[in-house]
Image (cartoon, rainbow, N blue to C red; front, side):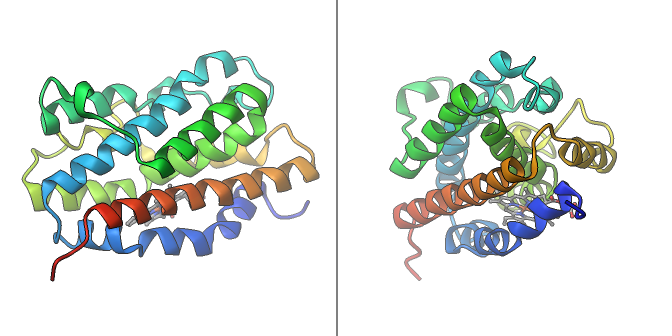
Length: 216
Ligand code: HEM
């Protein structure tokens, strides 16, 4: 394959990225048109997804395909839990529930973690590289819209304390993708799974949009 895999996967998911970015829920959220409750509900959904990603990570640490991607400085579950405690109060666990699309998404991530490490890589890429990129735009908007302290409680999910240079980290991550231990056919399957990962995200946005329609 001549095209580096990192380029291939980015290009292949470009259209769906635009779709996710321009979903009405994201647009309303980032446009400052929704109350903090919608942001909290979205954060809850992320918690279920990252639980699946990170509960599955430990067993993959020595996997020849997914192992190199498992980097604790990326882990987000603890940060999400801090954000949820801030957003919902210390009893947040009792009130948290996944949307149907979130259940499907988290189940697929767990399934990949268990049975198909290369598929797990697709989910890993879709979430973490996105968080390191557009996530920073979301953080900035959230801080302004709902008055969270800069990089503080409420937006800790978007703050990678252990990554001092995100641009350099992303470069290294792309090198990992380029060297992924998979043949061309398997790489194509990873790309397909990445598209599926984006579709899961869009489905979650769609359901959140249904729960938080704009009255205007
Ligand atoms: C409003 C929401 C979003 C905004 C504003 C946004 C913005 C961005 C931006 C500006 C980049 C480019 C960073 C760069 O070139 O280094 C990026 C990359 C990325 N985003 Fe998003 N994004 C959003 C939503 C999403 C969602 C929902 C996902 C999937 C869960 C996602 C996944 C990704 C991925 C995987 C990349 C890395 C592409 C690559 O370089 O390979 N983004 N995003």
